[in-house]
Length: 293
Image 1 (cartoon, rainbow, N blue to C red):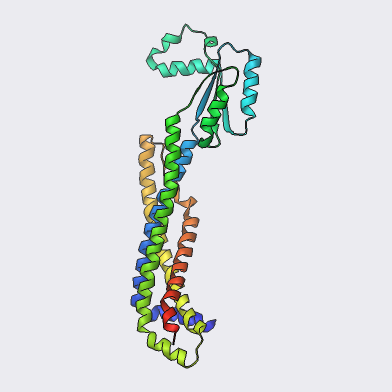
Image 2 (spheres, rainbow, N blue to C red; image 1 turned 30 degrees about the vertical axis):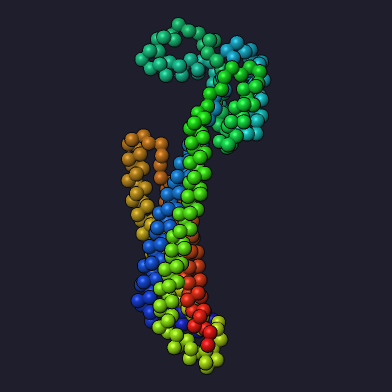
């Protein structure tokens, strides 16, 4: 083990050109991967935020008694498909009507709150449940009408599904690119040492003793590339995050970039695993044919 790790570390310094080439290739691929991953995470985060917006408003008949309203409210509160439930009283509905009318609020000044319907603002656990739920609620006694932004919900759901599929594709492509390019780059370096490998095989060195220093070398290159990619991605994202969120705060845009601190550990872990994995597998693939003597 001591020999394997010592040789693996020394190989990095012996093959400076390969080290810089592989590190640069892997760093570039990981940065591309990180950009796509951060983009997808932010899109998913904002989609989830959109789903937090109340989706359905159930209006009761304005002539319902307090007991009937309480009974209907009990049915809604007990529904396991509901994530959030907010009653809107007649007085609150009247005040809301005045706000919507803005400068023409005096049009409802003469109206009593009794003419306004009691309603319930509901957010579902999943947007996939909305259509079935609206159909079920419309059949309840005491429900006059149900309002919900069907097109918006359908668009959010469809976009979410597209992002998941596209995200998987965009994440896989840079990984394959990094493995292919780095593997071929390592092959060039290993080819230069095929005579050394052949001599070691002829004098009785085992395959493990020959190949594992290359694997350690590949892992070291991968981890160094991952560290560089992490620093560049993290710094670049922090600048983008601060600039974008400052503009969002001024413009009132509801879409925001998530904080880098909340995903930095995950990003570093993913970079490290992919970097070390690509380096190790690339080295194994590159040296395999030279072990056949």
